[in-house]
Amino acid sequence: MEVLIELAYVLSAVLFIFGLKMLGSANTARRGNLLSAFGMLIAVIATVAQGLDLKFILLGAAIGGIIGLVAAIRVPMTSMPEFVALFNGTGGLASLLVGWAEYRNRMENWTEGVPQDDLISVIAIYLAVLIGGVTFTGSIIAYLKLSEKIGGKPFLYTGQQFVNGVLVLGIVGCGVAFVLDPAGMHTPFLVAVGASFLLGILFTIPIGGADMPVVISLLNSYSGLAACAAGFVISNTVLIVSGALVGASGIVLTTIMCKAMNRSLANVLFSGFGSGTTASGTATAVQGEAKPIVAEDAYYVLEAASSVVFVPGYGMAVAQAQHAVRELGDILEENGAEVKYAVHPVAGRMPGHMNVLLAEANVPYEQLYEMDDINPVIANVDVAIVIGANDVVNPAARTEESSPIYGMPIINVDYARSVFVLKRSMRSGFAGVENPLFFNENTRMLFGDAKASIEALVGQFKG
Image 1 (cartoon, one colour):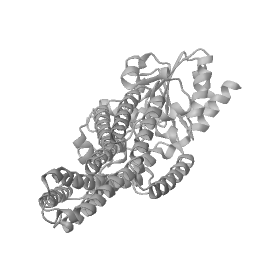
Image 2: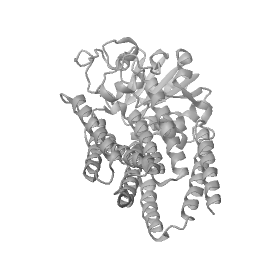
Image 3: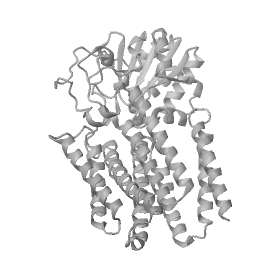
Image 4: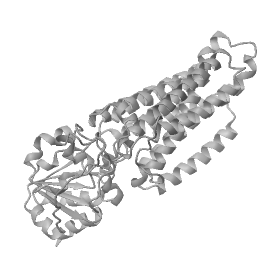
């Protein structure tokens, strides 16, 4: 029986790896997700088959399943970023509880010292608790920022890095003491639990809202590392493998997103980006006069266009305009225009946010273009339609050295022959940086709810 369980774990790990590989392509992402889910089902069945008490397992599965089902049905796509943050947090908390429970179970056996064979378990217990605690509270803060229950701007104070450094040193000290004498170090262990919670909060509050996609990706990696440590604690092969996969993929995605912003991870975590000031401490100001346009006039420009690029941002998610955008894109194609959708790596408030929305609206995968693919041809585009995006199309990133986003790669929509920007107002984006694109000669502002504006354009074509 034990051999069959290990073989099932190996099969699950193989399915996880192939599923993760398939997630790298929009064409195979859904099948990859199902493949990974099937692998997890095999792993769960194999774990339960070890003769565990099913009473509490089934009760927990029922409660969690109901909560997950209700959340999946009720949570709109607009709230998906904070929903993912909560997922990361619960994963971290689960790993913390596993480590803590295993510590309680083993503590009586360690009164005369820790056997050499248990040393790895002791270290794993501490790491599971530490990383799990940081992930939990950090994810809760990310959730509160993304849901705008607290301010999205970074919270900075004097001596912040010093406080964090002292806290980290205290955690390391408690860890060393715990590993040397786990049975006699119950108090330092509890102190480390509390310190991990505090570190998660202090780690996340200085990060501005514009950097939240990177933070979510990083916290996802932390939840995987915590699960991996928990796997070592309970000697579960599939938990070690799946946690390592999540941790590694999260780190890779975090690196890719940092590169997309031309910033280091340290800069994201410690710079306080999004406070609305430049490097010199003065607010970025843009002078000019915006030129509004109405749907009727925009229709005549689009009707004559031979190429159109949609550039979605968080405003499209807020307005739930993705289906209307797809309908307008289909109409433009029928009218003879070439239609593309340009997606910036950090558009929205979580990794892949815009891709998920466009996939939900059944936008053809072959019409989705990454930033590096669309920029070389953007100058030949007749109309670029920016839907609720701001920072990822801000030309100040190329031209204004004093801007906080200077050097960040953007989608160069200002090079298009005409630009329509769909926004409710002239407010700056999530990074708090003014956008000179709004005042360009080739830019027209179509004010109002994005979905209503797109539907008005659709109505003009259906006339």
